[in-house]
Image 1 (tube, rainbow, N blue to C red):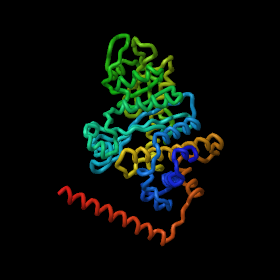
Image 2 (cartoon, rainbow, N blue to C red; image 1 turned 45 degrees about the vertical axis):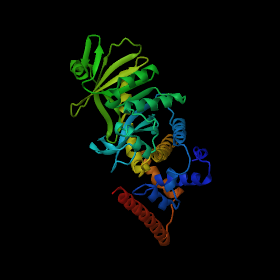
Image 3 (tube, one colour; image 1 turned 90 degrees about the horizontal axis):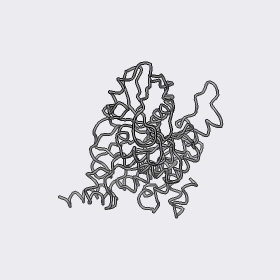
Image 4 (cartoon, one colour; image 1 turned 135 degrees about the vertical axis):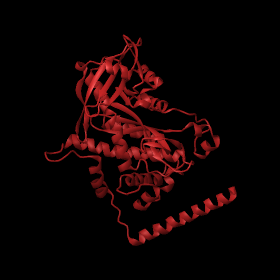
Length: 407
């Protein structure tokens, strides 16, 4: 917490943000400002809206914190989006759109994240809210959500390029970028990475056209031309059930620009499903390295799972952009803390035989018990119940008055 303390000019918000982060690390079944305030005995509701502090500056502190502790010369920056299902249309960035969280089109808010995936651990270092065109073209809605009138629509690949550029411009090094088809199918993102000399392994659709010495072909057509002897059984990394083995093949592509471009093909040994990756590297890279990068993309899924399950990443109940950016900045800080403690423990004290390595879940429970375990009496609970019902009554009255005025 000392790393971000200087972002708060007064001691009150500095103390409250510490309690809020502890609340995000707690074992509360639901984590929002109300539940954390009652758990911590501190009014944290107004921390996201009223005090003046820069969430982007805190994000930069988190990025330096992660890079310092999880530093890896062959790090992979993974970009991916996550959606939070929401009701109504007042929350910033909400509209009916596809979200992988629900697996279908829902009324949701979507954000793009940048995850630092090193060999010692992984954690998010940046985030950008995807603001759909239906919001950016509505000045009244932008104003109500706390977005500036200069806000313009940006696609998810454009947001990803913005975050990667921000990371590299902060004098951090990244050898590779990985992402799914949303990002691999965007030529502007690929060009931006190539201009910076950053390698990438980006998934592409089967209809993606790649140029070889024999001409231009669809990715699935090239996969059919690969001879059986060219496939290699390689692991894309370890999973919950052991090594993730697939059959892999690589085809050299022919582009006039400098650098090496290849089409990496993954074949599932159980289902026969194919996946295709457009790859670029400033210098030649072996297939084993490309496979490692492709397998690193699963790290972002692990981040979403632990970030939402342990740090309340998706449990915010805020409507304005400033409040959203502050909540997410503190949530990724909480998750980064768990990831770094896990990496440090595994490096200093490897698990003995008969025990699995420590996980973020295993670290969270003893940490919050040993560091901060509040004891609440019945009188304390009743006072909070009265205060909560008082605010609920005020909110209800306000809604009824607004409804009567509109009628």
